[in-house]
Length: 530
Image (cartoon, rainbow, N blue to C red; front, top):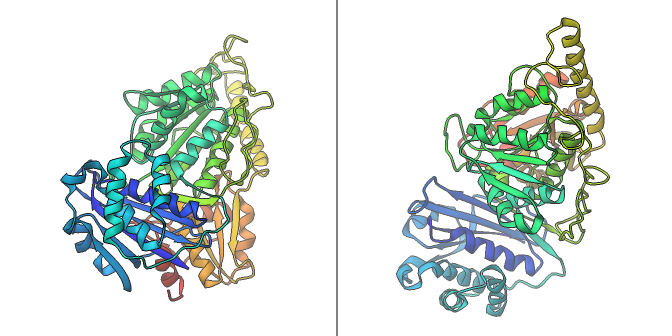
């Protein structure tokens, strides 16, 4: 059983919060969910919608056709009625309930509609609201009851004995950073990286860390180098336009070898692009941004669970090898909600923190004692400079000494490559015996994984873009048919694969309208029927 529910309305009507509450209801009943969020670059008044997909089996993406539409405004009907399945249901809340009467609780009518449609007892809704909202319960429950009475029960979901956790990519990155002993997080707000700043700021006192919003991205990157110079585990967050401004600082990192972790959350570009939509267009700048040559690590997680682990690994490489680590995400991973079975406690990393359960993954210890593995001011005399320098930080121009330092950084790159082999740099999903291979990275994971499951194909997911796992060539060579799937207009991963392995993938499925791939879309494009 797989169901897709579309909730739509004006921005500011709480569509996303209503979807989160419904996802939590389903998780408590033991169902897996995936939530796609779509909204424009307006604070209030534009159209927004969520597609919440759920199943008794793991689900990682959404479809075009939906089983239920809940409309909080007329535009939802105008834009999405063609998406409704022939046997689907539709509820026009805006025709029957006044937003002025219910105020900020208006979206809870949608929660009541969906709960009754799915056969979920209203008492279960009340328990979730107590956890999720915790205040103004009377007004919220009044709205839920109105929606409950307005809808019909069309499903009857039986409880499944599973402990399901729902988490967005942004929440996962924050969790991974905290679990890794983050000391300082610096950022200037830029969609879609901003939620990580908000999440960490909300938890900074409990987790004994510092979050700070500076005046622009130049200040962020340079302050981060200063913070990390003192020994603090430091991370910054931005999107493509902000990362452009940070390139002078990333180059300084390369020669000063001050650890730096950058969360680069991609959105549609160039320029300001389509600010609240997704794209995988920043791969080249992540791999090569900054002048000169210097080592770096670039990791691209494909969902929330991988984002926890990838954040930990990015911090591990930065601290232990004094390198630049780029955590390469995008809007689709950051603002989608994923679900997975909980039950494994995070290993303590860096500090003695009583971590909560966040899923089946294992953190890699940053350092054995939680302290920086490098010399820091206050313990030793430490000099950091943007000029070429010797091992003592003294500026040099002598040709032999310059050559020696360049070769030292080249050796470090080789050491990082060797160390990266300890980690899962790529994954194989689906039917491992299939002669048809689909290749992708980052946020395309969910739709590809669901599509190949239906088609019986194999999926090669690249997680480490630098150091690149060149051993994937054997998987390419043994496949009879290969499809490259990317959310950009040029097939940027394909270019990297050709550069690193000499293998050229001709069958490219590229999407560059700011929207992510859907499962049904990929099934059709790769060669099957939904």
